[in-house]
Picture 1 (tube, one colour):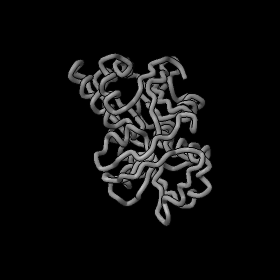
Picture 2 (tube, rainbow, N blue to C red; picture 1 turned 90 degrees about the horizontal axis):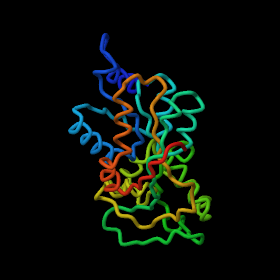
Picture 3 (tube, rainbow, N blue to C red; picture 1 turned 135 degrees about the vertical axis):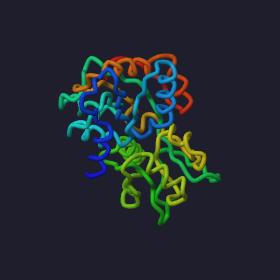
Length: 256
């Protein structure tokens, strides 16, 4: 809790500062880091204004906003946590947009020549042996929830559920595989693209898990006029290359 408090303090507006001359604070899913950092840099070049990112799992970000963290924009990796924020009155509903899509992959450390066909006959437990499977927390982190749903669909969850190394966000799962601390992990395709030390060994069929949708919205308490401008920039053709470079698909449709 101390680290969270310190982070909030660093994002707080100094006494007397106006909404018009402060940075746009974006609470964004960890899997967005590479693309969103590049998009924010481009926006700053175009507008001279700055967006400051706070990355974590969507569930953690939603809870922090609920607890009063000073965010202007919430950018979630799934609909569930945006729906949660909406149900608590934490966002401006009219600003909500389903912006991005993604896919779910199985990764191994770089150099692995294994290719795993992700189909209903999959015996992932046999492939893992005594090793562990890296995933985001399966009851909270969006990538972990998608991964559990996919493994359940393929009939593989029961065999591996006691061998899962659950992490606080999807990038932490990526890191376990990148460092060779886990032989396999479930992450988004965009995460795999971002790390040269992992390789994709299988892609989960789209129908094996709920559609992966990234919604974004202005928070209810945001009074920063630049926040709406940055959200509009993220929806624009100028931002598209940064997301597509990482493997996201652009949905760019209002609502959920």
